[in-house]
Amino acid sequence: MKLCRYGKPGYEKPGVIDGAGRLRDLSKVIDNIGPNEISPRQLRTLSRLKPETMPLVDGMPRYGVPYVGIGK
Image (cartoon, rainbow, N blue to C red; front, side):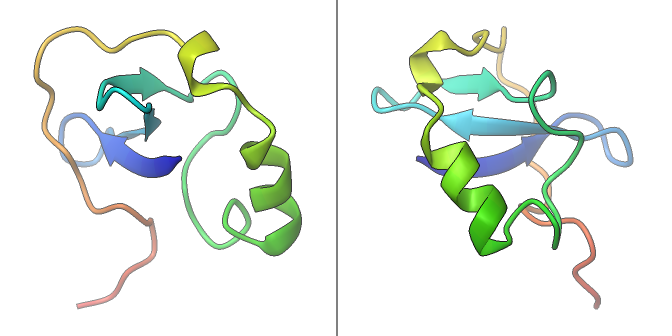
């Protein structure tokens, strides 16, 4: 499971890349991908998800910074 963020700058949504390389929307499960979402406990919860059950993202959206809170 590969976590990512996608969408317009400042309005990115959380996503996951499935086993076939398709982008899936995670916004119904988590609000963003940041420190809380990548904690060991939350990663265990996310690892139980089946990416193929998440909605496919249409088109070719822009990929954003994978983790909110990265400084320059």
